[in-house]
Structures are given as C-alpha cells and as structure tokens.
Length: 102
Image (tube, rainbow, N blue to C red; front, side):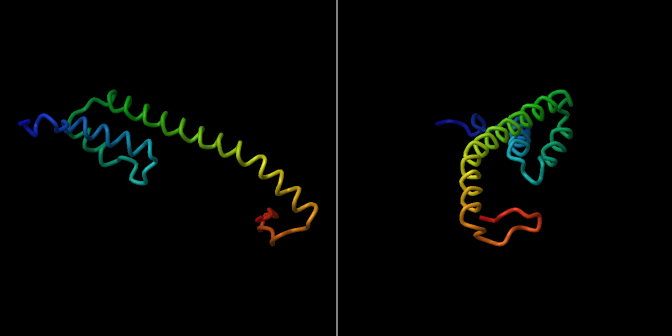
C-alpha cells in the first residue's frame, strides 16, 4: 500500500505548474494567485522568471502555429469568396468598414 505523501506535489511545484498552465492557456486570471503564492513561499524571482518565460514561449508558439494554419486555410477560401462576389454580386450587406460578410 502506498502512502498519499508519495503522490502529492510540493506546494512550490504545484504553484509553478499552475502558474505556467495559466500563462500558456492565456487564462483570464493570468496566474496572479500562483505568483503571489510562490513569492509567499520564498521562491526566488529568477526561478519564477524561468517558469514565466517558458510558459510565454509555449503560448506564443502555439498562437503562431494556429495563426499559420488559419492563414493557410483562409487564403484559398478568401480568393473563392472574392471571385464569387465579383461574378455573382454581393450575397450580404457589407460591414461598416466595407468588408463582405459572406
């Protein structure tokens, strides 16, 4: 039989993982609670900075990949939509900035 303490994370590790997840997920709470917790536990700012840097890198990289995939999928569709509206007329009322909505 195993002891529960063997599977529990130390409070600092738990707070670091949670901070990184909040930043990487772009969570609205921004991990500020975890940042406060880490500071209250005496975790050096340099260690917190590493966690923040890695989480931001992963968040930014994921965003770039998503944007790139969207742009690749969007480009051909945009050309078809422009061609369709040019030959068949507008299919909807344009936005306030003059962009077609379909």
